[in-house]
Image (cartoon, rainbow, N blue to C red; front, side):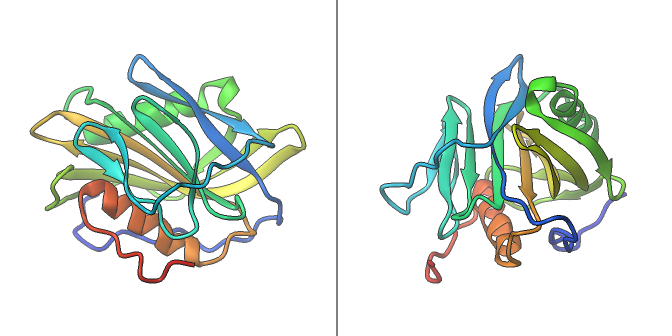
Length: 209
């Protein structure tokens, strides 16, 4: 299904109120592996500037968001109470089938036991659209629910998987934005702002909290 409508906001939540946190463990053979953790400390940014992920691609944290973990071509961000997280990895694109790449990254993530992501359920078919942005020109995304397993048990989450493609450089970015039921509605706008900054759009920090 293809649409030119604005990005969908992340769905309303009705889960048990439990805090959780996770961070990317690494990127192996151009596939993303994310790992859950219950006690990782966020690192507050020294400045409000953008974070370079790879050459030419960066992301600007929304007000109140911090770096939880990062590597040579990926970064994990968390909001101030760890109720929402956004993780992104930039890598060479495996072909031009954007939906196929999205599904492959989702399968890699959910099929990796160390990632702790279980019971993944898509809320819709993948949606694709053409972008008029600097860093990426095509997007596919899908909303989902899942459980994140951790030391204190499984935590229900809701989120969106995004796959972005630069048709000129043949780079792709896999984005996983998740939140639990303790997250406020503000994190929806935060997630959209940060993904827009990844696309190459400026992010306003006038409303820094």
